[in-house]
Length: 212
Image 1 (cartoon, rainbow, N blue to C red):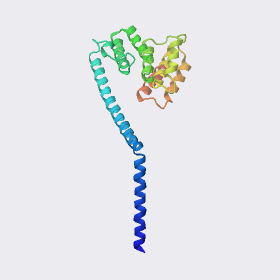
Image 2: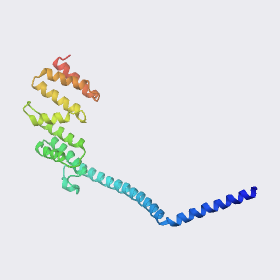
Image 3: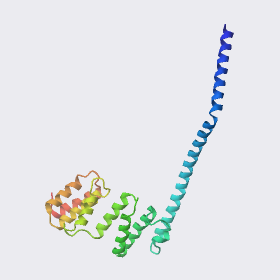
Image 4: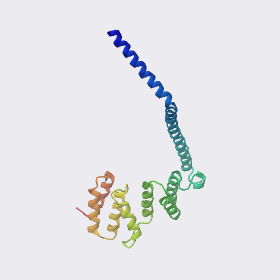
């Protein structure tokens, strides 16, 4: 009885193996294609990572060399697209140098080019807007374009929100709009992202103007 059961099991096992081999033979081209496709995708992804790493290192070295000799080279010497990330960062460094040299007009031109760069991260565009404002801050509420820039920079999702609020505070102090200035002091004080340095500046303003 036991031998019969073992024999039946062996037969069933052989039948299963036979069906499996027939199925594999029938769909061998599909399976081969699937395996080849997986290998191709993995290889392609690894090549993409490698190529991106090499490209990043090359761009980094290019930018480093540019910054090291920034006084003597132009953006054209970078040999990259004028709208590329590397070119935009180079323009920001060049603009900073020009500001230090007192060439504000050319610095403004570079900041404006960065703002207009398609596909560039919003952080760098907002940074350029802030730099443009600081080069020529609003003198009155009639400077509508400059006030609009501060409104954009002081939005809740802006990385320069508190800096823009500080500029609004300075504007209203300059205009002797004390109540509005106090309002901006409160907005800065209560902002969860305010730094210790910014709080120290607000403290100095309060002491200078005798605010509670």
